[in-house]
Length: 210
Image (cartoon, rainbow, N blue to C red; front, side, top):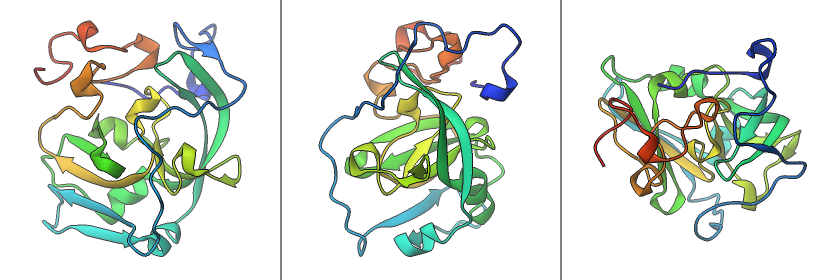
């Protein structure tokens, strides 16, 4: 299971970059498939699955952007081996979503759903980190469409594929299930400090059978 490692909590002498990563000065655009067209009148953010109430929660775009705004200074580590350090991400904390639409007691994992059916799975502990954020801004500026506008998930202590662009919803799950890249050879957990890049590196208990 992944564990949060913020820049401010790294051990003395620990390298600035996870193993195998290189410092990136800009912010490359990396994603699978086309950039979706944002249609604000149709857009909604949903929380569903094993919710505490048994109901599905929905927010329109104006409702979601009206939720409490917070910022997190955090790095972004891409599995393609670049790292971008010290960005300020602004948006809605994952903990706020958990409070507004709490999961059932037996929930252990979440599936993050994005446009075109793209998905990424996370254990609840990773999702519930105080540093996990549904980002709408970077360094005080709205995200561009190429970088995930209107909402992308940032999970600083995991590889960036665990934080999809163009997020549309969260599914609460009582058992783990692999997401898009996890079904296609990426590691089920994705901790950059353990260099968990690919499924062949998984140890027993790291994830469901492929």
